[in-house]
Amino acid sequence: AQSVAQPEDQVNVAEGNPLTVKCTYSVSGNPYLFWYVQYPNRGLQFLLKYITGDNLVKGSYGFEAEFNKSQTSFHLKKPSALVSDSALYFCAVSLSGGYQKVTFGIGTKLQVIP
Amino acid sequence: DGGITQSPKYLFRKEGQNVTLSCEQNLNHDAMYWYRQDPGQGLRLIYYSQIVNDFQKGDIAEGYSVSREKKESFPLTVTSAQKNPTAFYLCASRATPTSTDTQYFGPGTRLTVL
Image 1 (cartoon, rainbow over the protein chains, first blue to last red):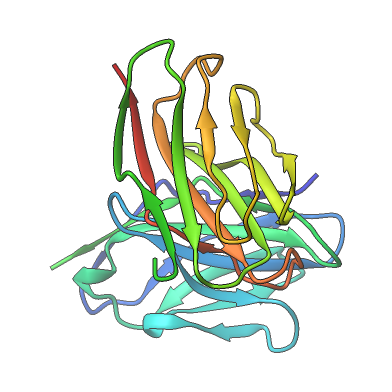
Image 2 (image 1 turned 90 degrees about the horizontal axis):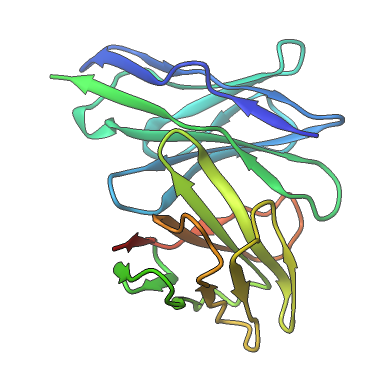
């Protein structure tokens, strides 16, 4: 079985400060990892993914994430938060190889304070 | 949300009624998915289709039905057997069912049972 944990229900950060949204995963094999963002009453928007290669993945809107195999983590980061980054963020994992389901975390609400 | 449309945006159902949620994609994607989103529970997979004329049950298929008669369309019917249907429903697609491909989401339909 595979699972994703997002340990923080909500993260508050001041505008201009760096932000981190945490994600840890559990799979019985090599993972594929994804981050999505959701604004109120909207669908999920894809931010970035890790498949293989460089552990630091850069994505949309200045976001990046670092894959850490030993800590089974894939934390989302941004050097300088914007008020418009306030939204719900989802981490997701899939097992590598062939056709595999995607398992989503429960989401972390990011609040950027002006 | 571009490329995947869901209708209606809001839907109200009386108890005992079946309702059908529409999902259409113009991305020429082979695979399509239906998820249910409830507060604090993340996304849960209802049904998925890897290719036209084929579909499989996800984790919470009871009380739901789907069809995939056309590549671009994957409607979801919420039947009267679904005991707690009030939720936000999200449709997604990806180019192929392969795990490396990204899932892209529609804008969602919010279903409320009166």
